[in-house]
Image 1 (cartoon, rainbow, N blue to C red):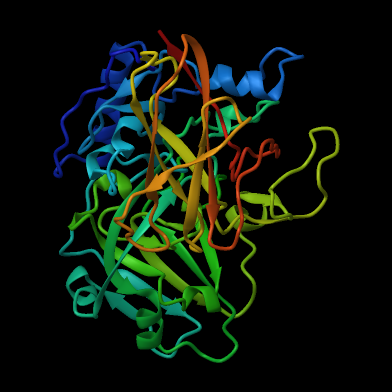
Image 2: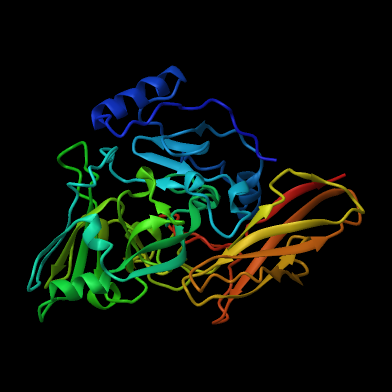
Length: 425
């Protein structure tokens, strides 16, 4: 069982509360709990000589972590409070859909929206188009609604398990969630605006802003063909409810199968451009080594990188959790979730001896589509006392599976079969 320190950041959320007052109140209350207004998660490397497997086991072992309760959220694991980075505890991954109040939070810029006047809000669609649009929420809801169930996963999910350790938020496995997203197809908005010949990309920006003028605005882009994909939507509902403020209210971009960096929150600007976009968050940040395994050597970094995009196949054991105790001779259920970038999970195998032998797990019959995760289970009766090293291995419909080892400088796209060590009494 993973232990968490029970100190919390608690403050009221009032939609009439101004942004500065909101952050001032959060900082003041957080300061009273001995938290700075810009809490940083350590990214220091483990001692030299630590093996990859032992580092992973150490990372998955029980360790106290700060909990925080932000507006519209239950207690989540706190990485930083400005901008908010909140991780979902594994217990919330035991259902097909992750509850909105438990869904992870990741912002890049510290000046985030704390309230939105929906009567005045407008989504601007402009640039290399025939008819620029200014769309209200009511306007968006006049388009044909579409829904998709999709995993939203931070590019750096599970970064803390990389060895050697790398810079960035030290997420464990909770920087992800699965939800039903409802909104309007982006292609329908682009068709309404009328994309001109010569357009090549579409950029997206939200209401969040940088505190310092030198910080680049958070702008992402998609190639025009990807932007017109029928599964890419502008969502105004999450699990049949309005999006929480911290998850992008009132609307956010949904790019199923792609990492969350493209899922721009509080989206208010769509710009069609006729030349490749070279902004910081595409040309410099969120880039990955250009090979299918997202692998390179710490001693010899790859020279070619590309913007991160499609999610790799992976699985996460949800229960039992590290250091849980089970009883020898008594059957219990190993459960978890598996997903990929949209080809669909074909099977999951489970090992109870650290990968020496594998047995097929049972996939949940409730298949919510290729972009949704699939829950899996495996009943196991340990035969003797001691420690057991559990592992899961997902395989998608294309035969792609998980790796035994992986490293890249950014800690992105992890899909290693990380062990979960439990105690058998």
